[in-house]
Amino acid sequence: MTDPANSMVEKTSLQPAIESQPSDSSLPSIRNGSITNQDEVFRVSADGVDFRTVTWQRLIIILLKVQVATGVLGIPSAMGTLGAVPGSLVVVGWQALNTSIVDMCGLMWGPVGRELVGIMFVVAFVLCTGSGLLGTSIAFNALSEHGACSVWFSFAAMVLVVLFSSIRTWDKMTWPMTLGFASVLGGVLAVVVVVALCDRPAAAPAEGEYQLGFDVIGAPTFAAGITATATIFIASSAGPVYVPIIAEMKRPQDYRKAVIPVGVMVGAIYLAVSLVVYYYCGQWIATPSLGSAGPLIKKIAYGIALPSLVVSAGIFNHAAAKYVFVRLLRGSPHF
Image 1 (cartoon, rainbow, N blue to C red):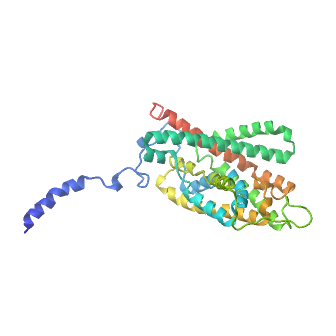
Image 2 (image 1 turned 45 degrees about the horizontal axis):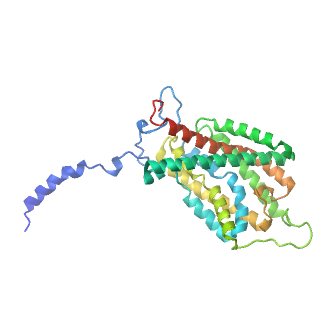
Image 3 (image 1 turned 90 degrees about the vertical axis):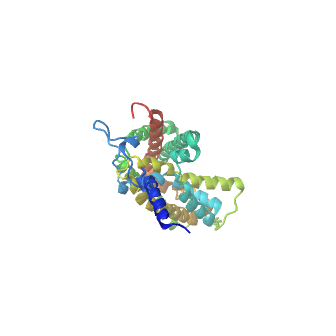
């Protein structure tokens, strides 16, 4: 039979050991808001730039523009390949999963994984920047109808993108990004309204019967299906930009207040725009989708969406350049 006195002594002797173990709430973490300047790359200093100025309200604007970019213009054509239902499921699925980043992979795979994914991150965002430059050049060509100036249009797009991406903090980029988000929505909505009001798609035969080609469930080949799925993946793959912005938030623990509503809003925008355009245009969707409503509306839509094309390319360029900057100078006297 156990002696109550001995049991009391054992409990008393174990108590200090239990209390000495750190609890999860006492460890430094973003959730607890206990990360200090010593743990940060962008420390607040008397003679430096204060990077930590982003509130969660502004973060919503930043993340909306980060996601709703040139990729939305390719989703309707991907819907045409996959069909309405599979395409919608792919949109929802990728929107929910695309939230990975270099440091997360570093926690799972160690230093080698961090460096490997870091290289992939930079290459992917350089390609996204190039896509934005191409889209801007196409917009200039659509507005001018002068294809011989494509090289000069690309050069002009590069200058505009470099100027925007040279803004040092995400907070200062908020207002241009607000304009960019409004412009891409305006351009896309112009196309959506016109295709819904027209008797037939602009690319369909002008007279006689035609096959719309709207499929609830498509029957693509393996290559076509994978390409369409990858197109939707790229359209919602700006999630890697999310986590680096935490470093410039006033209260990093407020991150979830922005990321959850942004995910819902972006998914709703993608589904609404792509399904309406696909429903009314069917197999006659243009790529990018801004050309689906005919030459005149194409000019109007590109004119409205032009600021967004520049801002989108600048976002990817800024994020990739800042990552390289941090990676090269990490551990040096400059940090």
